[in-house]
Image (tube, rainbow, N blue to C red; front, side):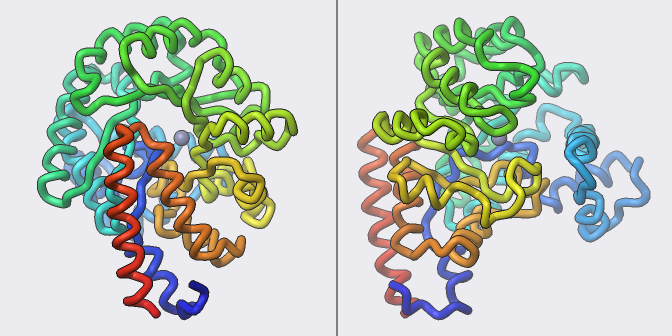
Length: 348
Ligand SMILES: [Zn+2]
């Protein structure tokens, strides 16, 4: 296992089969796609190249990050843009051998410019089906009900989108400002979503602490926790997560870039993994944080001493924690096993 040469590890990690469970569509927009959208408007003469764009996507603080995030979204102008967007995001993932992705999107952010959540969803389904045909990558959508919009709009959005459940839309989450908008008001939205067959996750334990994680588990009934980095603020919660096998969608580089965690060496992912928690590896907003799913795994190997056996376990955790059917999980696991063995012989 450990005989893979250091200079080959990057290739190995890039080529190994993976799944991605916590990825925001708008934060994963490939730079080329964003540049095309910007040029189409012709209103940003200072952004001519990918390099200009890369410079624009560096932040002095969290407020600045939000400002740039909002700026970027202003170039996604039409419902049909979402077809191109999801197609290009899935293309980028497939180049890293991601076999299956659950992609979060926030249609409510486009309501003010008159885009319909239903049409956005329809274009996304078209785009992801095209990506499946072209790149053989499977995907499902998770709708973010956006905490800032409140539970009433959340319920309205659920009503609007329920007919797409099972046709490409699989689950719901709540993202946004966790510390200002706690999860409790969403109890009834989550209950309703569950009754309608949606799978449930929520961002918790990132900007707020352990209490927020307890609430999404006990009151919203989530099956997974988005982030959960701050679970170690409560030892009882750690034991509970382990005993109940509740997966954490961890996003290490995001946590560093948003300042939730000072540096990668301080990140609890290794501790959680060693404690037997179901940890998964994800990239959150790769374009915004200048990361990729490959880099997320690579940093674990280089900086936190994860072995290749550990990495393999993490990728299998991703399959187990996904919202796929059990039969699909089993067949994907055997596919991963086969590819893993081939890669090991290739790089030894
Ligand atoms: Zn997120």
